[in-house]
Image 1 (cartoon, rainbow, N blue to C red):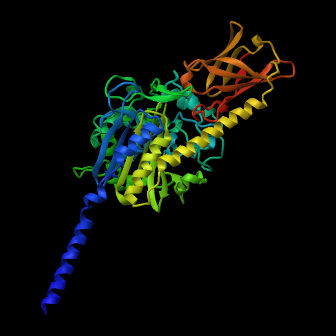
Image 2: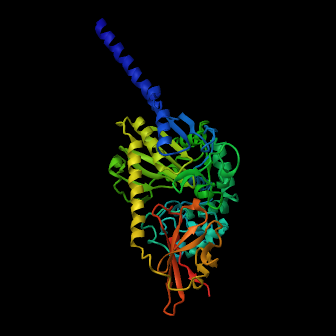
Image 3: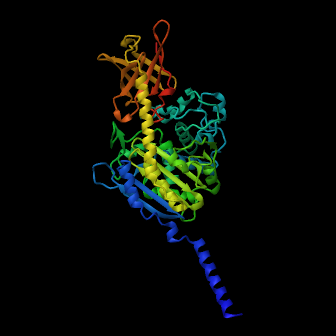
Length: 526
């Protein structure tokens, strides 16, 4: 054997070892965050007027970033830190799904068993759906209920308890046939929480705290909406009210904790994403849940129609899209993505994971700007995908401006079409009285000091003046301006001039879908 050949083989062997080493352990370059990350996030805070946010990045089982940016409260110096808590809202849903998965593993429930096996008192409007609705159906938004149906039972905070909200679902008429269409809901996650309590003997809060958060090591997180109102290292929620971003009251009702009650931090969200990306395996080698449960959580169940995004966001158009158990499933630049967003008054967030890359990113904010978290998530995802750099901040800023212009145009057209010279058909006192909706309950309209005042009897903050708009339509201007949800109230008359019914609808297309005024049918109580 010649020395040249021997040297060549030595070089080849050395190269092979290097390649194998690269496959076995990712390089620092492959796990490092984008080099301009801090400056980029700072620009996001400025452009979208976000006081503060928490950012987590995980890659190959490592926590690459878990830190805070900006401040907890606008105008005050306290910074957002790695352990500062934010309401993660609907990013709670996968935790509820995982809790049910643990009970499946315990042999206490089955994914495809009917809900009434565990909650015999539970009913939907259609007896067939009552009989056939399964535990899985509670999590995948295909029950036939319309978008956000029933949310007014808890949003804004009501004095109904969780069981009564679940009982009232039997009066909600479906918008589509059972399992035929996707429509996002929150109330069936509340029912999922009732299932957990019924079969485990623990409240959703106690079960999730003990069986998930403590096991995973999310020591700083908690499980109640109301915890966001406590003092401590908690980000203050902010929102644009009358054109100015300012602090607002946190949502403090615990009725729907199973749908969105967890408060968490950059550190704890990194821990949670690593658990999901490891398919339930914990750092000590034990398991939170099995690989089979992971497959259940991440397998698409309900398809979602795909629409074209704005032109500047064209590369975000997926090839497939759907909902699994508490997680959205789609693709981005040829990779399968697991993701979810969350929204509460003053808090919005997003979690995005690409399992093939063992990569995850979470952004929690204390201002209602989806453009902020999207700009960060896709910048970081592109970095790990090696994709061409896109100015996502500019793209989302352009898309936001177009949407705001569209909303303003809709409100302007509505004002232009108004018959401002019209008058109500009846004297104001004839509209006063108690009205009843089958699923919500009683709503009272009173005449006070020469004007009408509407009050939702089970929702203390839904009190507002009825201003005449046109004919027999009024606008409810809620006294609590943080609601940002003024609503039309339109009365229909009987032939004898008495009121037959009243219907409602949001004035602005920007109104949060959980204000499901359109589902109410108000009948006067004789």
